[in-house]
Amino acid sequence: MPEPQSSQLIELVVQSGLSLDVHAFMLDRQARGLFPRTIKFQEDELGHLQEYLKGAGITEIQRLNAYHRRGNLLHLRRTRNPGGVHATYRALRALLNWWDTSPAPNSIHALAPGSGTAQTPLPSPA
Image 1 (cartoon, rainbow, N blue to C red):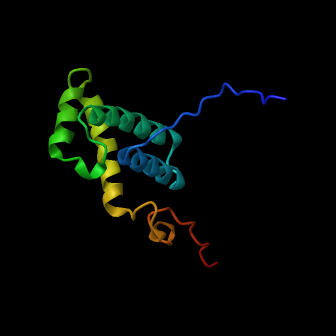
Image 2: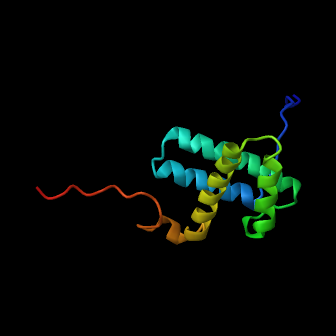
Image 3: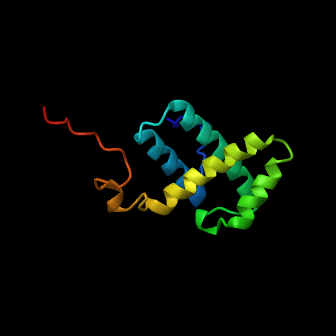
C-alpha cells in the first residue's frame, strides 16, 4: 500500500547574526521586566533598523559603524519628524549599550548571577 504523500513544505529560515543579537536583546528586555510598550517600541524600531542595515549589506552587529548609524538616521529624516528619528536613535543606543556590556548569549557567563538580568531583591531584615 503506497504511503500518503505530504504536501507540506519545510521552510528554512536563516537568521543573520544581527537578527540573533536583536532577538537576544529583546529577551533580555523581557527578562528585566520592562514595560510591554517599551519592549514593543524597541522591537519595532530595531525592526526598521534591521531592514535598513540589510539593504546596506550589514548582517553582523560588529560591522555596524558610525557611518551606518548616521546614514540610517538621515534616511529616516525623509519620512519622520525629529522626535521619530530620535526614537530610533534611543532604541539603537539601548541595543549597542546592551551588546557592549553583555556576555555572548551562548556563553556560560550569560547564565551567571549579575550577568545583566534583573535579580529578585532579597527581603530587608525586619
